Length: 238
Image (cartoon, rainbow, N blue to C red; front, side, top):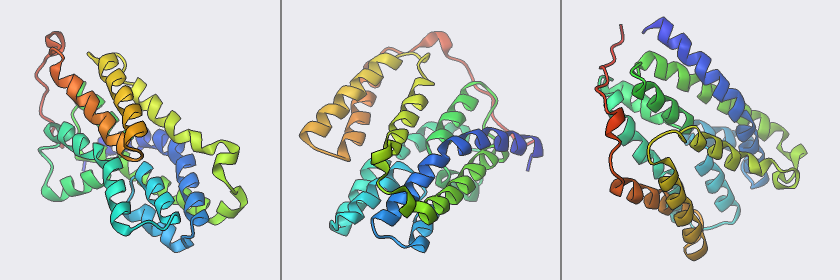
């Protein structure tokens, strides 16, 4: 393992870990509020590890809906991860099968965004960097979930103090980080319109996947930005 890349990943991931900690606390508090035990909350965070879809699943658990609907709803929210894995595939093709399995487990939104930025800049996405970046976020997420679960009863209803707005703000900030890319505004506008329309006519959580599909559809018909086309070097572990 390349120590330099690993340390760089830890530094980059630590910033994300600290900014995502409130979401972990929020999840822990919401999980306890919806009837999960302390151990169940930690286990779900450690195994599912999917942020937004964890919150969706917890809310559905609290409403006592059918298990198949919970699974389907979580899949709808997490459908974007299929697109994520396809997008970063060319940057991690040198990973071993075991490394790829771990990489896809750690593939959350900031991991994807930073991997794409690193890959497109020509730095490459070494496993050492990727693991360091993802591991620190995962550990921090688990700890913040534990804190939220432990003190959840003291927080009460998260919406009453505005904590529920953190997740949309976080995603908005991540999307805006790509605003200089070719076709950003047409794709985002189409995705926003598609998501709002789907939320009105179909309902949550399907508006997430359908909004993404609308953005992808527009992206496929846009002309390619040939001015920035370049050959990216293959990454090695050094």
